[in-house]
Length: 468
Image (tube, rainbow, N blue to C red):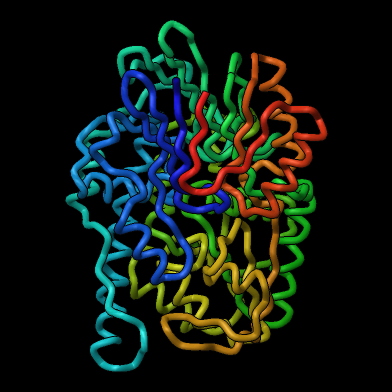
């Protein structure tokens, strides 16, 4: 018998983590960082829901921190087994995890200094891990190509297929010998969208008996790509008219590159006003370098652009910001500009300082281009709350807020239903398990699949176990 225990991103979005127990040993699918209320996040991330002694091998679907960010904690707690992932994800994880460690160390120092001066009521903070733990993880991480079957344990293999979500993202296929009965588990990780720029469309593996499917946007449809470009063009033009700034909180991986790509298209079409555009994320610069190493997994449009010696991530007016001093100067300078900065949920990193600089300016605008989890600053901005807390201080939000869901790298409801249908066509599907979504989104997707007569559709809570 095989069991899957759902340890994170079950009836929630962050902290993806699932433990597959087989007769041959246990496989951990993802080990992500939980993001939400600061106190709750610290507690959950320090105390993983899995005992490292129970993990015999780990598999990582992609490099986003809500899927990879707790691997250094796992290492810190004693895990010394292999971590299998795609080659691009391995390259990206080295930069992503190092950045996560540096941000934690920096934020802990900054917050603790404010606590010591008595200027905030926040509690002192200790970083979850440091660079030595990241180095330990990277020494254990093994990159393998798409479509190559890789033994994990006796009787258990993994094969990666392109998920089309971010560079290197994988659909994870586990083939498990259950006492002579071969069973196949398909884990979507985060599923990408069709006909989006830069990356290829998601693939469709055959023969899955169990599908673990994400449902981040299980209750809605995304607007088309053309509308995404129109909306961004209008927002930038409006900021120029008002003399305000546009701050775009963006994941350094994929979202920053997609925003740059879209701005380039607007520039080439003569639709981008003369305005400075700043990419204020040393991590995004490193990630963009990794993108240049893996051109073989781009879509045809992007490969053609590169073949003509054109960078999809550069255009006149774009400036890269590396030092903290340069970042502070961007906030201090007058006049309109566009600032793209990490992190995506507005909880850590330089974007928090940019938000603090414009939050009370009615001429400026925050543009949300990705999912924001509950109890994050990003979600409070999405909800357009009149008061938001930044660095322990309450601010009156006078800036504008726009939400452009068209930029999302996650599949929408129709994409998810179509993927499940294609999976059913290609194998003897017995169970569909919906994870990585908030409850209303997961229940809406569950209803869609149930109406289409999928067998055994479930929405597990944390700690629930599926046996098959």
